[in-house]
Amino acid sequence: MIQAIGLTSAPRKERPPAVDNVSFDASSGHVTALLGAPGAGKTTSLRLMLELQQGRGVAYFRGRPLHRIAYPSREVGVVLGDVPGHPARTVRGHLRMLCAAVGVPARRAEEALDVVGLAGLRDERLGTLSHGMDRRLGLACALLADPHTLVLDAPSDGLSVRESRWLHGVLRAHAVQGGTVLFSTRDPKEAARTADRVVTLDNGRLVADQEAADFARTRLRPRVAVHSPHATRLAALLTKEARGARRSVEVVRESGNRLSVYGSTCADVGETVFRHGILVHRLADETGDMGPVPAADARAGEHARSRRAEAPSYGTGAPSHQAEPSADHTAASLHRTAAAPPGDRSPLPRLPALPLLSPSPLLSPLPPRIAIRPGRSPLHPLRYELRRAAGIGTGYLTALAVLVTSVLLALVLARLGRTSPPRLLAAWPRELPLPPAALGAGLLGALAFGDEFRHPALAADRGTVPRRLGLLVAKLLVAAATALLLAVLTVGCDLEVLHLLHGREVARIPADWVPLGASWLGLVVGCSWAGVLAAGVFRSTSAGLAAVLAVPVLVVPLVHKVLEGSSVRSAAGFSLRLRELPMMRWPFGGEEYLTAATRVIAQPVGGALLLSLTALLCAYLLTTLRGRVR
Image (cartoon, rainbow, N blue to C red):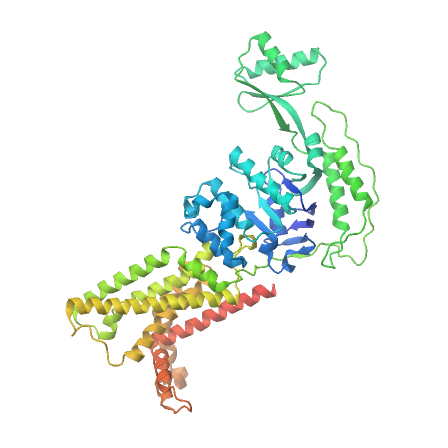
């Protein structure tokens, strides 16, 4: 079950909090509706419960707050808005990626698609799904790890009657199997029709907590809906006849030519219409909402909320289960004092004065703070990253564009005849700060984190992308493998095309190809890592690509200026001494590998790239540790 206690959002400057001390329960095996008009605080309450928003209070899921559950996605399935996935990814690919994130077998994707009726659309792109299909996919994401609790924010908004009926059937089936279902809605009729318990919010405060039957009896009432071009005349006639017959009938003029007649029947209204010869376009029975909760109900809700907030002990980390005989009496009184029809102007009975529990000096006067805690996803980071990188066509298109650009540049440079063989094979003119392969690797690295922040896929219930070191290592490994493959393909394609069109004298491999190859691979991999780290620090693909371009454009001149400055003469010969370092004899050999590595670092771009990677890695670790301290 769910126990929400004292949920209070952070203050908004001079405005009152969006949610103020809301407490309610959602039992296992039942469907609970969180009802309220737009702006009543439904979404904020759900986000506070899921620790996605800062505030005060606590929410227990089967006796444990969310931050004390090892794998939250396996306990709570969440649907907050649309599916936060890349629009170019397929339905099956998105679910298989989430399987790696929550740590369940990939076959669960097919099972979830069968449950929500999307088996025939498994190969469709997310961007092509309709609103109803998107809602079904969101429910499949929530059911992926077979959670005990489902929390959904306005799941039926924008759905047709048939789709809404199907959705509530799935939620009811989950509750019948012993699960807990909590969903928000603004439609009172939907809440009364589909839920077992209805919790009503108004202006961020709890105003009613009722069983669905009591809610339908006290908050909903039958009415006759009439559409007529002579609505004003018909309203006057109905009011006059009701007054003459001394019947309690209320006629409410709605927008357009619509009337809502309370306290009458279709037969009575039809007879009046027939007698006076009034044209009617529609005459039907409906169930209407009674409008805002009266002040007495608001006082009852305040009383119930204050008692709920005082009962638990916040310092224990688990809810208190002590007996509260007056709490049930308060709920019963709340049900008895629900709103009367507007035609009945008799005052509502006041609640009896109930003794409040005396606050213990050991209890905190305020509920505990709610801090935003990132999730632990993905549980299988390398598997997740491989599926993420291979699930969309951006990487393949980028690699193709890099190969085509490199071949064209190599042909142009060969025709000019003023480029050295290493730069010719790398398609790196002196006018460009970086070769196309390095820029492409940097872009792919920046997309590794940038797409996550644009289209978050990691456990939508936990907010932003986690900064786990395991996820960073997985992204660095996949980015390095992609960059190495791109670097080898680029040189290979350039070499083959040059050999085909210009002969062997142009397409020749340099004699010192080992250190040159090491420098080339180090440059491409370093650019990809710079893109990954910068996008992770600045949360943007553009920032990641800008960091890659900043290495030769800004960092290299800056390093030159620092090393050649008069105030640091001791560092002026750093590059020369670095080249002489491999001349030392090492006890176990390996001087040639050290030579290749030091030649890469000794180059201006290599040294600047190493400096940039070190700074970005330190920034990433700093933000990660800062998030853990909070």
